[in-house]
Image (cartoon, rainbow, N blue to C red):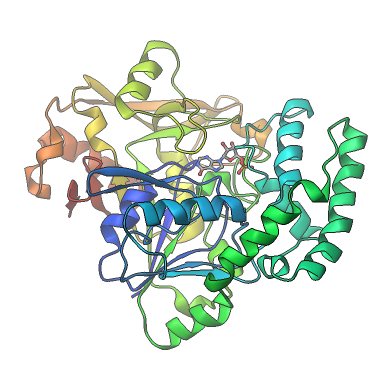
Length: 420
Ligand code: IMP
């Protein structure tokens, strides 16, 4: 059965570890949306490896890793990550890159940064040019990976797009970029990446036809979805389940199990509403214990309790079958742990998550308190060995959202995962 791993919150749920610990038995790992705004952390032989664009199966030579058409690719970043894999003594022959993935250029990043500084609503993006590259795709002006291969074709296509950006940049008071500033570097990148380039739509459909077990690696999280997330404080792709189909060119028949990843609490980077957010000392404690600093940008993450209203919404709109809960161990020595069970909006209690900004911003969270278990759960190998108070916390979540928590991560290493 194929497996889809989706982040159920605002990203950073620990998908890298979940995928790495579940990847055994899967022959293919595929990324299908987002770009190097993602940061999936994996511990390889005790060494921390952060992958932004490469799929999380790259460290297992037997697994084929596919970057499908829906991913926006910065080729310079991709090469950096491939070189990093080589420096670990691994080869990258297990990588397959879509010929038709849209390319991120320096002007995308430039304008992303500029917009962040100047526009009326600051999103708090990763400044990687992700949104701008997707805008070009939607605007029907994008260049694709295959356009980097032939010098004349590349020049002919990049010139008008670069002009388009310079016009925009001028209007907004940003700086102009010349094609010559990056042309050779991107052309060389095209030559470097040539050996990995394939038609991933056919490749993945072939894998499916031949019964290969595929693990789909979602990036970001459901609440950052352009359609169903807390707009406008979202990313510009679909981290919800539909992104898998549009990003790969596979049909609904590919679907197997859908596992949702969520933390035992909630984090968010960037701006936007966050009903269960903590502040002051409480926030500081959780941030420090959980080491909540961005894998991509190093920014301190905003932190809060696990929000069951938001989680149930994420489960509902994606048809999640089971949960992989991460970082339960962060609560090891907490006196008290809380969950959000209801929202109070204009004096009315509701369990509906409406992402419209004026609604979600006015939420007052209703909290339920649990006594901490004050025990080190990182050493636990079997579910029955969890302290009673931890089991109560976990059972409450399961009953509320109506699906099982099948895996519980109690530490950063692969084997610190308890299966129910
Ligand atoms: P962008 O994806 O760089 O355009 O950023 C849009 C929003 O999504 C910002 O709030 C980012 O912090 C957030 N974001 C993008 N990628 C990730 C991720 O991988 N983890 C967590 N947040 C992310």
